[in-house]
Image (cartoon, rainbow, N blue to C red):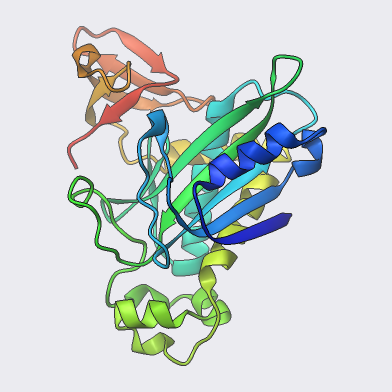
Length: 279
């Protein structure tokens, strides 16, 4: 893995895609990670702004450039979500859950968003992907439009750190101590944010490197979903709520498609779109 770290950048995904566009051989960029403490133009799906303040989170993009073309980008997002959940458990001993298709939640709040974007090669196929991941680690003053649903992995009392072997090993920054009133971490040094980014990406690359591990991760993705059996609103054309309809979530299949039943008892397998659920 080759990790390139910025203090700030417009967007780690944008930087990854720039490097892919300039490369004569994208395979040479496989397992490159672009990480930044903050983003000035972080983005989510449909070019929505992604709140990316410096010091409270870590924002990074894993470049995946396999030997064969990428034919199912949705799997990349699902595997990335599983990698994030595994790392949050290892580092902070928190039980993270997944909201289809690309959000990771802790205690009912979104703490991580994922955006996978493809690079179109000369042959007209997707020969590489930029898998962007943004994690809110420390509490922040979220903008009003997202404050109700956004959260951080660590709460202000830092109770998670006390039982976390990873935190003891890697230490915590002074910023972490000051913003979270965490006396347990005051004598520690270092910054766990980059260590977390490395760990997530290594887990992700290990998953994608082996077909059996990929299938196991896709099953774990389904198991970590907190929306199975819930009533949801499906918005098939993202941004156009006139297309929305109500459905019940039946499950998630091996291709990370959301299985739903409509009010008329018909069933659908959704591979894209957006859902909302009252938490």
